[in-house]
Image (tube, rainbow, N blue to C red; front, side):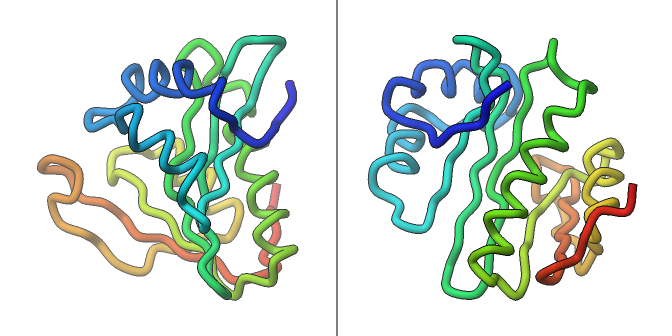
Length: 149
């Protein structure tokens, strides 16, 4: 598996993955904007050969980072790919000296919450009904917090 910066050629596969995994997926225009226009965005794809198997999109805004999305193709889930994408992003974020990194996760997504907690993300607030009648848990971690395997 390789992780590389997303480019325009990845857009159709990113759109397929969005539609496969998310109730409210980004459209092609939104994906292109992340790749070509959003100066804060860092969209990386994970590939196995030519197959796009996952991606992570994080934004760096001065001394803060937000993980906007992380996704792994269904047939590749539970193989450590999400963990590798998260580690990759957190290393880059720490290199940029971001004081805090934030993300949101569905309250029901226990697997993701457990992964984030291993990387020192802590719940800081709840967004009621954020995901179509499901709460979103806002989590944060501080610079340099490391994985406790």
